[in-house]
Structures are given as structure tokens and as C-alpha cells.
Length: 66
Image 1: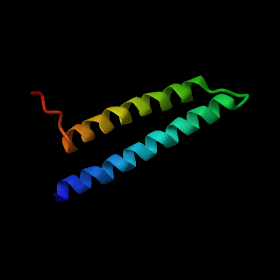
Image 2: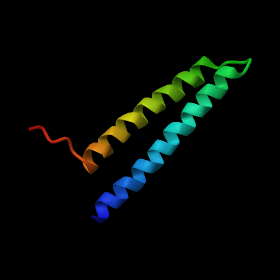
Image 3: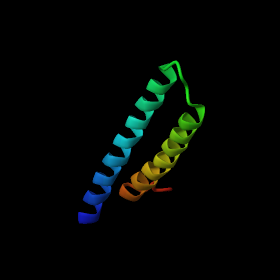
Image 4: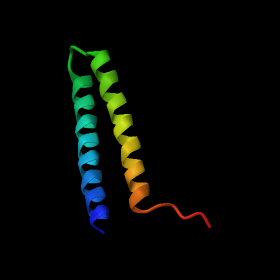
């Protein structure tokens, strides 16, 4: 039970970071000086976070194949 609570907290933190990166990418695209390399790095970080989020979600509630 304690491990599940820790996983949920970690999941919330990762989802928050993912949303913040998404907002940052949107904001950077709206600026006149676009740093494509920076945006590319942010998108890569978002993908890594998404993988971690999915991994933790599966640990909290694994898919049961019938």
C-alpha cells in the first residue's frame, strides 16, 4: 500500500512536469526567435516522461489479459 502511494505521488509529479513542458513548448513556438534545438530537446524530454508515466500507471494498475 505504501509503495502504491509513492507511485501515485511520483506519477503526479511526472504528469505535472509533462504539462509544464507542453506549455513551455507552446510558448516558445509563439516567440519570434524560435530555438528549434531547444524545442526538440523539450519534446524528447516529454516523450521520456510519457514513457515513465505509462510505466508507473501499469505498475499501479496492471492490465489483466483474459
